[in-house]
Image (cartoon, rainbow, N blue to C red; front, side, top):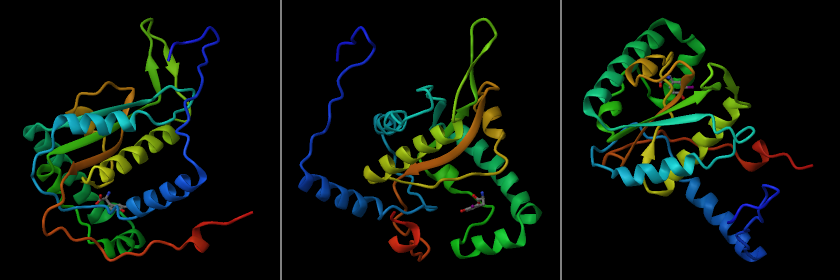
Length: 223
Ligand code: IYR
């Protein structure tokens, strides 16, 4: 699309009929409702081109004032993955042995999580999503970003949906605190880790907790 003098161009709608809209809404729900957080990964490789498409999808998310306040680090290097696993497990060990409340631990019990994170080495890719509170300017100043948490959260949602749509699996992992990711990946100070997502195919024997989602009448209110 050629830019116009005003800086605006016509929107190119997808243009589905109401029937197509209904069917697509239903189909997309059916697809996304099969997504599960997976903790057991296959070591089967995933092409870098695939990861790039998933990350471009995530980076197409809306953001405050279109500032796109994110950096996606795609980690494949086994040495880096090992360092990330060790650092995450160190933090998680402390969390599970004193930092998390009794209520939190009992809420997690049905999910079968613990401080051990072997998937951080098994999964062929780790995607680390960083948020940027501001962008540094060449003169040493700072260009402000807006609604950074909301923007990065939406991008993470796009990414998780894209991963699932491609037939891959992930886990929205938040080892806490996760400053170690900044050190290991040598990110600049204005980038803060937001989410760590192992990405790959599920292990053949992968299991998931037997959970149910809240029904429409609980999570939706019509006015
Ligand atoms: N970050 C820890 C603990 C944890 C917290 C929540 I909320 C979960 O849904 C699952 C785990 C971990 O990743 O083990």
